[in-house]
Length: 103
Image (cartoon, rainbow, N blue to C red; front, side, top):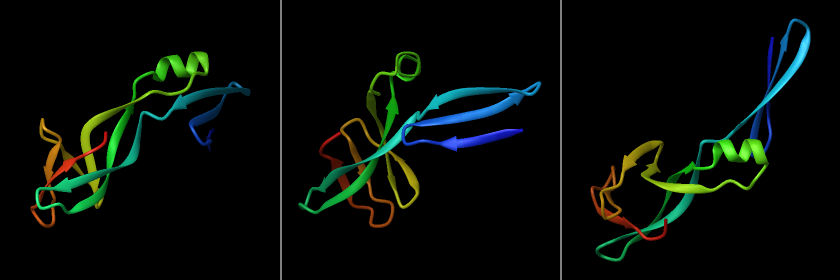
């Protein structure tokens, strides 16, 4: 039998092996953070950028704060969009080109 319990930063999995309770922790691997993006004509929007946990193993073992590295991917309307090398992307609905300002 598997029981799943979700905490704010860590997923705990409790399971039973031969009637013995066992527990393991798994940290989040990715999170979304709001960032600003601006078009050439000055229009600003807020998008969500994907961040990856770079210290997953160290966090679980040492209980340290997590360090997040921004990936070259954003999310708009449940669609993952890859950023170009200069942190630009074309909006999927309008086609306008935006640049991510703070990552």
